[in-house]
Length: 160
Image 1 (cartoon, helix red, strand yellow):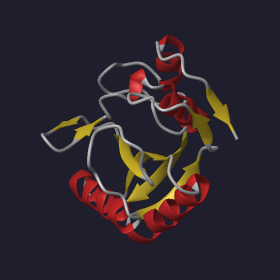
Image 2 (cartoon, helix red, strand yellow):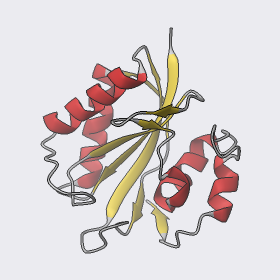
Image 3 (cartoon, helix red, strand yellow):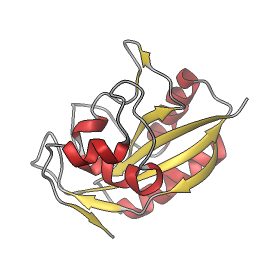
């Protein structure tokens, strides 16, 4: 069975736009078809603000993988691209997050879907709204557009 998911790609090391493109290619090769892509957006770092700006993009994908398999493959792609996890919210060559997987709610030690910070981050909501503004967050019961309207994050998200 094919499942629909939404992924957030982010990079702030090296040639970030090329990193996003390479990650998209690997996602298509290892995970499934990319159905839709948002524009690429630039924003200041969130959390640890003492680092370079991030470039972010949201992908809508179709996959045969279960949520756990999807997470495993995303972590593998991060490793293939040279990501090393040392501390939280550090600079990274690539960051791949599962935002939504169908309308499922998953809460495990290693996996939370929907992404637990999705509704708090403009850099996630802006590209998400570009491709699925009316998708309803399965826990909060509001559309991505409604979540963006009430988001308290005031970082500027600049479309490239």
